[in-house]
Length: 235
Image (spheres, rainbow, N blue to C red):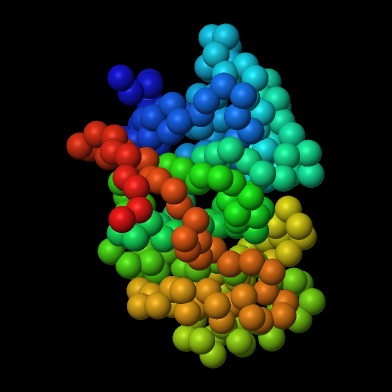
């Protein structure tokens, strides 16, 4: 049943999150992603704790926002320093292609999200059906996190790769800054034919500290839409 005033999109996000949380087992250390869908994961985990279930599960948040939400709901938290290998991470995505490659970072937490994902035995991505795409870049630019020092040179480099580059701004018009104090350049490349090659180019450039292409990290996908909830795995 939809919650009062809940939109269809939020209902799909909530249903996908509730299904994904079923993958959490007692005693796990779980990476907690960022964004609106991941917030549903945190709330569901907190609700289960309130029912006396999963009380020994510990979360590792991927952003200050997720940390704040989890603490407010009484979810116990830890860090990668204390738990350098995680059992499972649950996170959302902005765009997902048929091979379960992702664009992430619309909320600005792309670097921490990738660090946590790479430290996890399994990464379960939770989305509503609108996030599915035939090819990455069709619906979403690639976020690229850069050092403030020399950011314009990074923008020129990215334009040379074919992107239309926009420096992300905060609500007050100042440059948006990540939890690490870096800038985000949103790079509209259009549909990507070779996302792996683009990822390699981005990773070779000094000053670029992270990008939103998540390739080969997804262990499974939980997607909810008008036809129900589906759990997909890589081919």
